[in-house]
Image 1 (cartoon, rainbow, N blue to C red):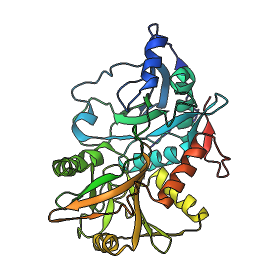
Image 2 (image 1 turned 45 degrees about the vertical axis):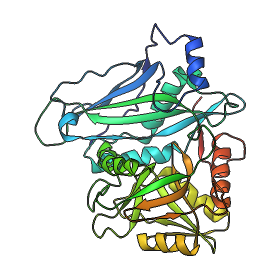
Image 3 (image 1 turned 180 degrees about the horizontal axis):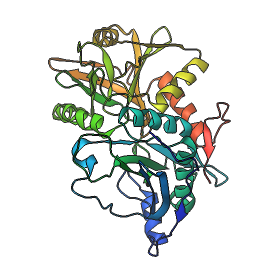
Image 4 (image 1 turned 30 degrees about the vertical axis):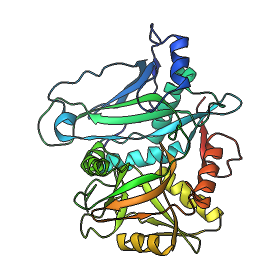
Length: 370
């Protein structure tokens, strides 16, 4: 789909009623996740005739949509997620944003949306964080950050089933606390045997809301059985492990292999996932991307062949898996009462140290925003 030749610029109109300093500091002291939002947001518009234009930073607030807006009827939308981190010198950085920009391009293609150039994507992040930099938590605040949510949706008022001729792009931001507020806790997973997150030829590799909506029934089923999240199998044979509703999975074996389900087109290519693969190689682990039968998981847990299991994603970074349950059975992965295994802990620490600037970024993964 067509793009503008000139790069997007973002005109800034600061709100006249920003949240008072005391209220903002109270939020930053205990931000939670995804409940409070910064003072501003980014918007830009794409039309078939003009391409991308009208980039703005304006007050965060309600979006006006016609009831016939295509996104409300045909779910033509995509999004991304990343974090901004304050380093010790006060500067603000984000982690591998070019990878998010490239994934958004792939998602755009799959969902028949216009492609936002990588430079415009990065410029939109800088524009918002520059204005709302006071919302980025302090360096010494623990595992706190500013979560950034770029998203794109079909805003054209039209009920025909075709790609929208008008699309809106936006970025909003929300302070985020440590995922494990009381210390790292292993999650308990429910094996979803009746629901699939995505199917062959579908939208599983795109970061679109429908994939997350389709995971919720399995997640609710898991909650009913005392689990935190659900793990999904492939939709064709129901025998191969794919991913959780919003995180990729890794297995650490007794003979130092790091195994993750291969990308089949129905699994989201996580930015954290690809980073973990690189860090695993540096640790001397044998990295394997391949199909993982659920029987291998169950048998490996019983025999001890699988030493550690963890999930990874932007929000939780690295999450140890403690137990998996299913109808009629369960398997426990906690060895010797430890909440987190040695490999899981090492990878998690290395990743966080890079993100917060506590160690040298030899990969060139960090990009300065402010």
